[in-house]
Image (cartoon, rainbow, N blue to C red; front, side, top):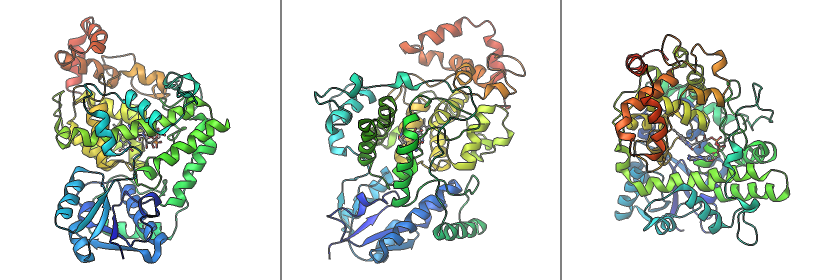
Length: 496
Ligand code: FAD
């Protein structure tokens, strides 16, 4: 028989194990206890990864074997025969797989089917490029894979980008009028996983954060397929316009909620893209929404993955803004109830209750707060990777170090995503019921985002002067008559 296929816990879909070349192989899944015990993962995330592996083992029946072992190396030793494996999703795992390959334990390393563009193709794309931009990459992805193109090779609808239509403030209501997302029905595997995690927690073998919840995301291919279908049939058409808006009482809005099944490797990204495109061709979803969604997967998701490898492990140590503050205890422990700022409390409560916050909450509330307060970017990266149910090593650096903290000095983002309360007020319904006033920067009710924004600019003015896009905000700073007071107030602020 050909060597068995060793799958990591984020390689669970049929495109990883049941293609014509692979479907006759035995499958080995190694449950590394060390991987779970080390860090404060969200309880629901431990549940998802654990349930995902057990679901696959159950689906594959006799073909699959789960091995419990302290480490992957020990697990393979127990298995006792050479294996093949797909490229894994972290620098550490890649180094391990290479070492095992040199030792003959891993017979060959297959390219990962978890992303549309291969690493080799990306290297060719990026070679000799002085400045690399997501927008250029995305257009080339569209051309290369023939997505949303007219027969003459031009973009469907005559435009590559419909972002302009997709930045509307929230509608004047507390929830978006869209059908609810797909929701799993828990099963026997969930019951077992919950009991095992309860025991591990009682015995101190794991120290998770967040609340245990009903499972909200897909862990098997059949479930992932249903979640995708529900999104395409009922939610894709409204995906675009309010992508950047936030509503206090609507955590899901029209978001896809597909990052978990995608990052667990349950869905083939190109298949997701083709199915979304078909909805546009059928006339069941408008182009702006379909393009917006495809941009997220064929553009952003691929971009973040390839930058992870391209920028290398040292990228995690970048700290261009010299931010050194430790994360506060309430943040690490997801203690949202001590927070008064309505936007921050809601986003953090979402992480506590679901291990999820949507993109704008991550970027413009959580990330924005961390940037303004000068939290250490490496520690923050670790927090996002463990507290979010869709956080995996490859997805963190470019999103957190780069996009949200500007700690790379402008490789991923062209300017820091720092914004005051006026932005949050325009894009959400949080400020109406908040104890802070987004218009105020001094005094008891000064909005921590508004005041924090000016304090951030003041602290980093010299570092940001060279950036054209920061000229206007820095000019605004020079005109503030009460700046000294604001900076002093924010330096000591413990009250958010
Ligand atoms: P939608 O908004 O509906 O988007 C559809 C899909 O596009 C997502 O499922 C995701 O697979 C993909 N996508 C879109 N943007 C990105 C991106 N920037 N990076 C990677 N994939 C993207 N995404 C994660 O998958 N895991 C993370 O741990 C994660 N951490 C983030 C941390 C910060 C500070 C920021 C700013 C972004 C982060 N993102 C992360 C990206 C994005 O916020 C999430 O992918 C998205 O919110 C997931 O929800 P959704 O499936 O409803 O996404």
